[in-house]
Image (cartoon, rainbow over all chains, first blue to last red; front, side, top):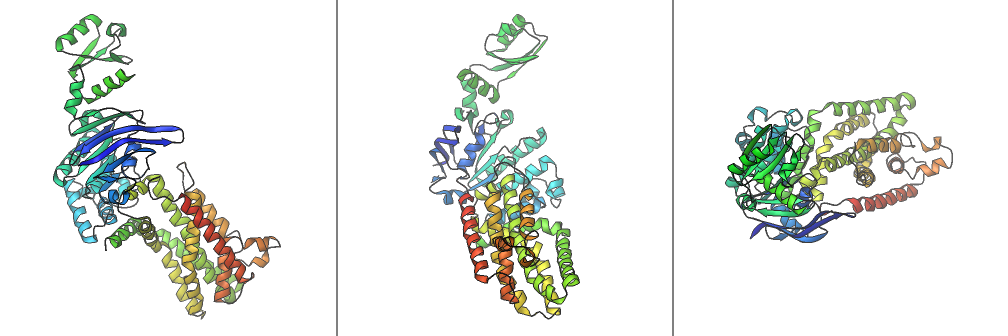
Length: 294
Length: 241
C-alpha cells in the first residue's frame, strides 16, 4: 500500500488552476520531497492531501483512505506543519510540544513525558522554558518540527520546514527528520525549493512546476536522466559560445558537460575569467527538465 | 477520554498567554470596579442593582464578539487553523477548548460582582439570571463577530474589526444607560441591537424593570441568533474548503 497517492489531483481557485493533474505516490516509511519554485503548487498539493482543501478534480488517498470521502480516517493518521506557521503565542517549546500532543489525544502525563524526550532529542534544553517569541528562527522551526514529528502520525507533512534558516539549522532539522523517520517509521512528505540538501535525505522526489509534475523518482534515478555529469560555472564569457544549453546569471553562466575534458574544452573555447566544475545534483536535473519543457 | 484531552490541550494552549499576560485580567477587574463606582456615584444603590447584571451580559458578549472571534481569526491568519484541521480535533472540540482557555480572562471580573451584589443585599436571583443568560450572550456575540471575521479574505489585524464592533454594540446604544434617554424612533430601533435586547431581558427577569416589552426583546435575540448562526455556519468550514 502507498502511504500517499495522488491521481490527477487538481485545484482551481476561481479561474486559475494552481495544481493540474498531479499524479504521484509515496511508499510507506519513505521520505518524499515535493520540490519546485515558489508558486509551483507544492503548498496547494499538501493542503489537499491534509484535507484542508478539497480537490477540484482527481483524488488522493493517504494510508489507503480517500482525503474527501474518508477525511476523518485520514486526519487520524496525519500530522501537518503548515508553511509560514506563526501561531506560537506565549508558550514555551516544552508547552508547545506537550499541548500539541494533547490536542492529538495524548494524555497530559504522556504528552509531558514525550515533550521532555523531544526537547532532549533536539538539544533544546537551554530554551525549553523560554517564550517562543524570543527564540531564533532555527530554534522555533526545530520546536515546530519536533511537535509535528512527536505526534507519531503515520504520515507527516512538513511544508517548507527549512525555509529562511541558516545552513547549520537546515541540516540540523533535516537530520531530525531523517532520524525520526527511522525511529518512528513515519512516512514524511516535505516541500522545499532547496534541492541540494534534500538530495541527502529523500527517497523519492517529485518536481512540480506551474502546478504540474515535471519529473519524479529517486534522487539517483533522476540524476541518471540528466545526460551530463558536471556543472560548470563560468565568469566573464561571451554567452554565444555556449549555445542554448546554459543559464544566464549575468556575470556568471551555468552550463553542463559530460566529462572533465569537455569542461576544459569549454573553458578553452569561451575563455572565461574564471570557472569551476562540480558534480551535478538535483537542482541541475530540475533546471534541465524545466528548460527542455520550455 | 481522548476527546477530553484534546479539548484540554486546546484550552491550555490558549490559556498560556492569559497566564503570562495577567495584567489584562487586572485591567478587566479595574473596569468592573470602575463601572460599579460610576453607577453608584451617579445613581446610587438602584443603579448599581441594574448595572451589575447588565455588565455581566456585556462582559460575556464582548468575550464572544471580541476575544473568541479574535482568537479564531488569528488562527486563520497564522495557519494554526490548518494545523488543527489536519488532526483528530473536531470543530466542537476546538471551540470548546478556545472558550475554556479564554475563560480565565473574564471569570475574575464576573466573580468579583458576586460578593459586591451580596454585600449590597441584592439577592442571588440578580446574579443567577445574568449568569444563566451569559452563554446566550457569548454565543450571540461570537456568531455576529465570526460571521464578519470569517468573510475577511486578506490577512489583517482582526481586532481592528472586533473592537469597534463591541464598542458599537455596547457603549453606543442604550445598554448601560436607559433606552428612554433616546428619542423615538431611535428608542424603538435600538432594541434591534443584540446587547440592548439582552440587557432588557436581563433587567426584566432580574429586577422586574424594562423599557421594552420582553417579547419584543426575545424576538430580537432569536432573530439575531438564527441570522448570525446561519451566516456563520455558511462560512465556517473545518477543512475541505
